Length: 152
Image (cartoon, rainbow, N blue to C red; front, side):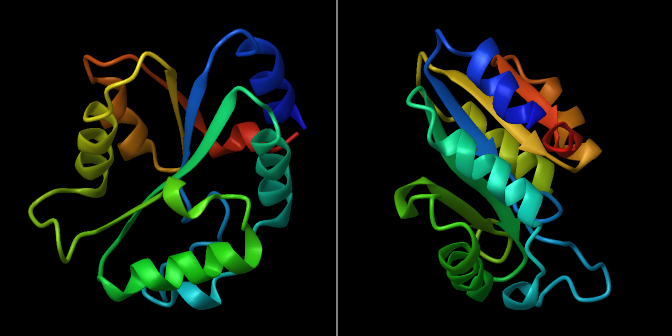
């Protein structure tokens, strides 16, 4: 439980907004079937680690996920209800490229994170190097972790 211990110890004196990607982090990502979200395999070890993190009083756990089509927002919410219900509905930020056009997934996530007005520590956990690279160039202080931190 490396990531849990990291969150517990390193950020114990801070209020944290932790944003977690879904595809490839808590749900398997099959490049051959990217639109079939409701049948994604849950990554149980990562889900369990994040469940424990959600119990830390200073951590506000959120989803920040991108999808291609509007209907996938509902599919992702249903998937979360089934496999990771500790992600509160009000903390699920799922952005559809069908509605918000002209941006890459990395740009959509960066725009979302930069729009947050808070004095809390913002952390993003993602598996996509492009996303992490784009966010790392932000003027806003956003702490980045790759999904490999979830693995002991």
